[in-house]
Length: 73
Image (cartoon, rainbow, N blue to C red; front, top):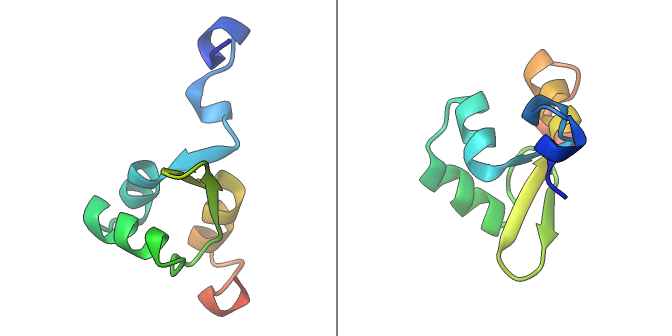
């Protein structure tokens, strides 16, 4: 069952796709995917299967608010 059927908005999701991470941080999709594959994003990468990757929305929001430095990852 997808989020629309449950009545959830996309903003209620706990994770972000790599393109969504790129848009929020202002980097290119190419760079975000490249860093995610190398596990070098400033937030932990969640791997789902062989290809799907996402990141925690809360981790990205903490990073962008300045609560966490990239060294504390």
